[in-house]
Length: 306
Ligand code: NAD
Image (tube, rainbow, N blue to C red; front, side):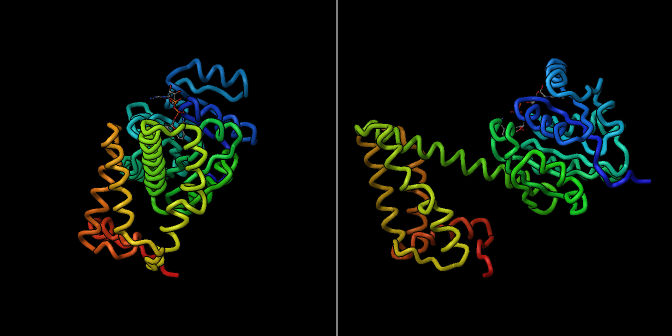
C-alpha cells in the first residue's frame, strides 16, 4: 500500500551553500529532517546549529522518507545518488516523492522520473531562482513541475523555502525554465560588460555609465516589458521603431568598438543576426519582427491568445 499522503519526514541531500540555508527552514517549519552529504563535516556543522539527524548512507537517507530533496551540483549526480548501487531509491517506499531542487538538465530529470515510476516514486523538479542570500531568508522563487497531485503534496514543503511557487507543467519543464532564465541573465550580464568596456575604452566613466544606462535598459525599457509582452506575444509588431534603425545603431556600436580596439564579439554577432532579419523581412518593418527569425528557424510562434 502507498504511504499516506502527508509529508512529514524529509531527507535532504546536498548540504552545500544553498542546501544548508534551505534545509534550515525545513527544520524550523516543523518537519522531521534527515541530512546527507558526501562531506560529513557539513552535516555535523548543520546539526550542531539547527538540529536534525544525519543519515549514515544514501540508503539510510531513503528509509522512512516521505520526500527526498536533492540540492546537488548537477542532474548526473542526482541520478547517481538515486539510482546507484545502494542509492536512495533502494530504500524509498512507494508513494514517496523525490524533489530535485538542483539546476539539473531536464532530460536527465525525465529519465530519473521514468526509472522511479515503476517503484511508485514520483519525481518533481523544483529548481530555484535566487542565490544564498535569498535561500537564507526563504525568499527563493521556486519553479515546480511534474505530476499535479505530487506538486500539490509538496507545495507546503516548498513554501517554507520560497516566496513564490510557479507550476510549470510536465516533468522537466521547471528545469528547462530555470536554465533559460539563467541563459537570459548570463547573456544580459556579458552584454552589459561588453557595452561598458567599449564605453570605458572610449573614455566614459564606469560608474557614470552604470547610472546612466540603468533607466535605459531596466524596468519599462526592458525588452520583456516593452517589446516582447506587448508587441511580440500579441503580434502587434508596432513599437514605432523600424528594424533598419536598430541594425544601423548596432553597426555604429560595432564600428566604434572596432575603431578603438575594444573586444566586442557579442555586438558583432548581434549585428549580423539583425542584418539577417533585415535582409529576410525588410528594414522598414518594426524592430519586433526580428523575433520571426527565431520563430521560423525553430518552427514555433510566440503568439499568445488574448
Ligand atoms: P555546493 O557545491 O555549495 O553544494 C553542493 C553539495 O553537494 C556539497 O555540499 C557537496 O559536498 C554535495 N555533494 C556533491 N556530490 C555529492 C554526492 N554524490 N552525494 C552527496 N552529496 C554530494 O553547491 P550550491 O551552490 O549549493 O548549488 C547546488 C545546486 O543549486 C546547483 O545545482 C546549482 O546550480 C544550484 N543553484 C545554486 C545557486 C547559488 O547561488 N549557489 C543558486 C541557484 C541554484
